[in-house]
Length: 322
Image (tube, rainbow, N blue to C red; front, side, top):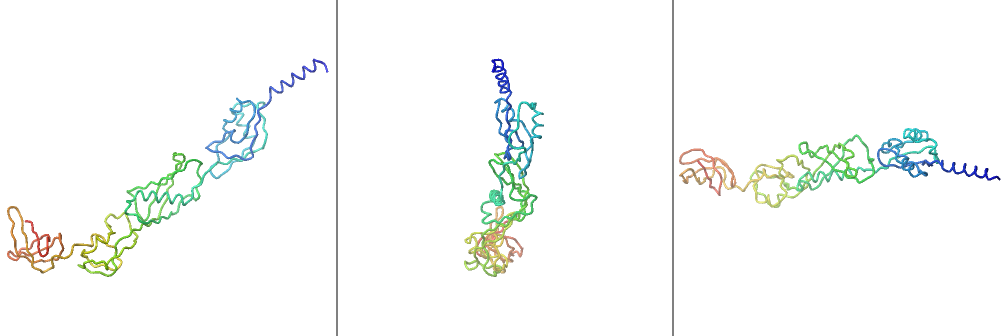
């Protein structure tokens, strides 16, 4: 072989080597993160380092929705390369003819949401008001399990105090991924809150003085939104107190049902302590009503035959301010 021919072969070989194309090995299947798909996520790329780095960062398509897949082929990718000023003679495709793309995701189960709801409710409500709680999720516009992007997951419930109702409530459940708000869900709830309170063991009548046999503790369903329902939870708060109206067995006891033991009976003679500016006298009177310590009753001043109102301060003793 002549030296000229050998030189020509070497020249052609070197020229071919210098124009070696960068290889794009397309995957059959690719899991990705984020909202867009870059070429480096769906293919292995080998060749000129500078070109490889450039190719890896080219956006090929937007990511499919969570739980869905997207299939793209080499022709689709060629369009993106052309739009990115990549010449056909610079690259060559290897591997699969098309790639199936799926977004990496995490799932949120219904039990996770329920726990987050119960935590939010317990924080919102006063600790002493909630001893036992049952929460049921109503009809929602989504299904479980929920698919969310991968990352640090945190659930946070928001409750409006102005719209709170302990039987029915809509809670806003915020989903955070890596501490960024991803989605807010509106979740209707059915809630049952129980509290252990003092109840009557039998039918009791007005002016009865409570003994230990008259009361027990029992869990009842309560509505914590009703501020006037001051249920009594301590047996000692009830013992020795007087019942102000008839109640039936099983009735939960409230403060408004209790008074002090009777100190004055209707029709009994009482001592009137009449006090005013520069005056303090005692008089004989007659109770027109009954009552316990601190209660206001009507009385009759026997000497003047005037009807007055006074506060019971002791047995058959009433103080009147004039």
